[in-house]
Length: 419
Image 1 (tube, helix red, strand yellow):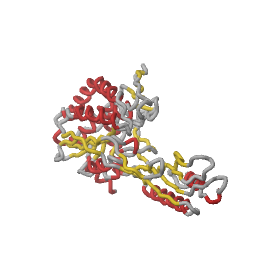
Image 2 (spheres, helix red, strand yellow):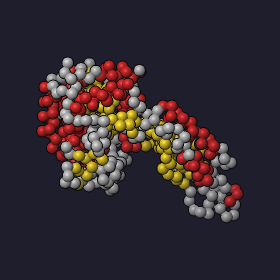
Image 3 (cartoon, helix red, strand yellow):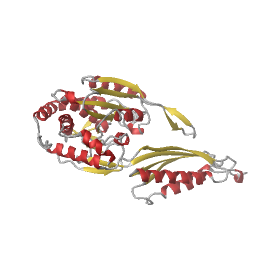
Image 4 (cartoon, helix red, strand yellow):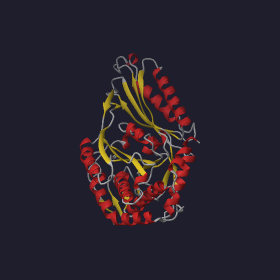
């Protein structure tokens, strides 16, 4: 058997092809990033989706769109409303092959129309622009790695399900079902194309993430004539916020952050509405359960105040993705594969979350930072390292080759999930 740190004939062919195709990858990424696809920009999402599908139609695969599931959100007046975003893109090939992979990525960004829309060449081997790294570059790395793999002789041994989502940056609420469905269709390994770190490191364990909205209702009254008749929702919210922020430091790895308090109006009116929006991170299932219990306790304390009632909305929408034996075995295989092309890969645990959390929760070990190298994502300083396109596409193509020829035992790694 060939060692993972050595290149096979198929590996060499894939690497040569991907080096030659790097300029095209970069050009296509620039074209896609020039289209604003903020998560709520339906027009932009609907403009880019067919371009992505057209590019992926070069694969030997079935390519289709699927409407995302509607989901609830809390409006500024404290009511719940149904929301939706763009289409989920689904690509599938060879479901009967002995090795199965689930692959994922997203085509939305965090940038609304009219905010960050300019692409600049920084003249140092980097481009600056919205979504270049996170993650339109990653989608192109995924595509080109698959095209290189399918050009080789091993393609019939590996099938895949790809889910490309329009809502990763707002939580995958519309696409979580599609991700779970694809992961549970027999996948042995998951591959997700978030950017790696700006030093080339990849994500190891990930915390779970929750988003909560607590709506508190009080009683309005004239603040001068009848202050005592009112019941201030903002006063109740203030106490709640102190309690929520006080959870920090109480349990290892758990963080809570109140992002905003909405409500109230004129200073001569006792405010009858307050909305507290906050997020939480937890390193494992037990910590997530503890955090949820504490949030519920604080909510019940707030609504036990005289004249205050309300509702709690939200949950840990992305469960934790801790390291386990399956994850570590996969990381070790990817690290050894990287050595074959001169990469020294490190896996660092992070508080960030992504679609890899969803795939892990569905029972599939996965590596989720296979995209381009870049940095300062979610800001107008976002950049991508141009040399990383060929490098990271080659890494993915080699992983696919090794899964297909058995050098990476996908079924064996997945079997460790219960260990």
